[in-house]
Amino acid sequence: MRPLVHAVAPRYGKLARPAAIAACQAPFTQQSSVPSHHVPITYTCARWSSSNSRWKQRQGKDFFAREAKVQGLKSRAAFKLLEMDSKYKLFKRGQTIIDLGYAPGSWSQVAVERTKPNGRVVGIDLIPAQPPKGVSTIQGDFLSPLVQNMVKEYLVEFVQRRSTPTREVEAPEDEEVVVTDKPSYIDTERAESVDSDHETSLDDGKLVDVVLSDMMMNTSGMSFRDHAGSMDLCLAALQFASDTLRTGGHFVCKFYQGSEDKDLELKLRKMFGKVHREKPESSRNESREAYFVALRRKGNVTLSDVS
Image (cartoon, rainbow, N blue to C red; front, side):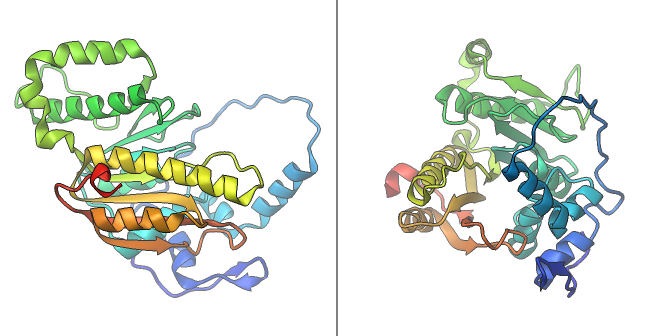
């Protein structure tokens, strides 16, 4: 991506700040935009609600939503991650990335572009969605221990396969792998790994370079309830990061601001070298969402140690 330049553009009748607009104006890739996929359209009779109409009107006026469509990105949320990566240098070539709550896939698109060649991006979400090219996905409840184990075992299998000097069959680099939440998969993987525990212990299972969490529960309109729900999701993501993130790895999670985020920030500061609160310029002004960007995970410090 080209270096950010100073620029301004209209946003809700005001001037948007330079970093976010520059992130939009610079092409997503150096070669071309991410190709869009043609999806069959089914026409049904529907009565549009007033809230749906307001959403469509807002999207039509939204600079970042328009830019996402132009650049072939799944959603405007991609610009939030692009801003944070530009500021904190989250990604490098060849990294392994976990994108929690990946649907519709814009963060995974950014991660794939930033880590190629030889990067590995795994997205997980309850919502079925067409994964971006080059992204492996698992559909299931991230809070389920079964799904968390599926992710960990898949990464171990991938690292072993990549580190094996001779392979009879090698999957294409851009092949998409979709795994569903089926206990039989776990049983099979566990059975196959019984005789190779010493190999699968690679760095004690810490195989991930960056854990991303853009997860958010459906909002209720009750501020504290939405805030508390976001804290639960952040802690679940942090637990996963504690189990799988390499020493020196990074963690990014979205949360709704409120009274309990100070406690989460304290835990992060004990586990990571640097912790930043971010409200990306491409985040809507009226939204209470924000992000923790935790950099350089400390060695031998787990979530249980700081809880």
